[in-house]
Amino acid sequence: MNFSSGFLIKKAVNPYFRMLGKLFFTFTKIGLFTIGGGYAVIPLIERDIVSREWLSRDEFYELLSITESLPGVFATNIAALVGYKIKGIKGGVMAALGTIVAPFVIIILIAIFFRRFQENIWVERAFKGLRPAVVALIVSPCFTAIKANRLTYKTALIPIAALLLMWQFNVSPLWVILFGCFGGIAYHMIKEKGKQ
Image 1 (spheres, rainbow, N blue to C red):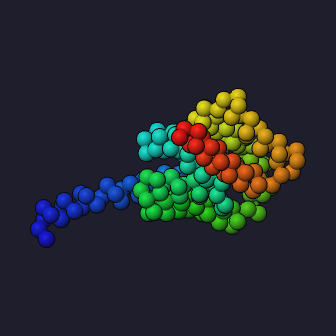
Image 2: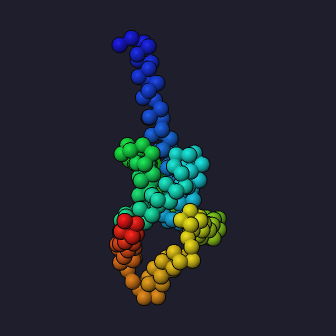
Image 3: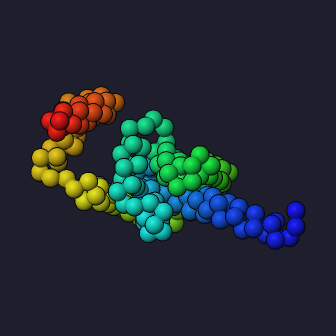
């Protein structure tokens, strides 16, 4: 293999691996600042992925709705789906690993030094200060999802009904998800038959 052909192969291979690296480090950064559970990660992923034009906002919210119906850790699932959409299986693996690495290292460090900092007044105040910020991070994607899904007064009745079923009647979220899946399939089948 001569120098020019080696250079061309290197030039062709590099962008692919560079993108995998970008996915890993982007999701590592997101994993580092995911405080308050899975839903707090949504605005961070949306900002990074949509602003870089790796996915459109509509594509992102489509993946988000799929993630919500999957079992497992929300942040890792959404990362894997986004990575897969951008760069296939390897992209999904790298993005999922990115969300796992930073929290794993932090948990290990906390476990090692927890007793030393447990009674520290500054650490206690920092965690109290984080609480309202976490609420904002969780509420923010709800309003963005409403805009992205173009909810009307009629379609807004569906999430309200689901919320009432879970909150007031203690219906398991699993049944709400299954009902939503089958309801969506039935609705589109009826709609398609109406067009014929």
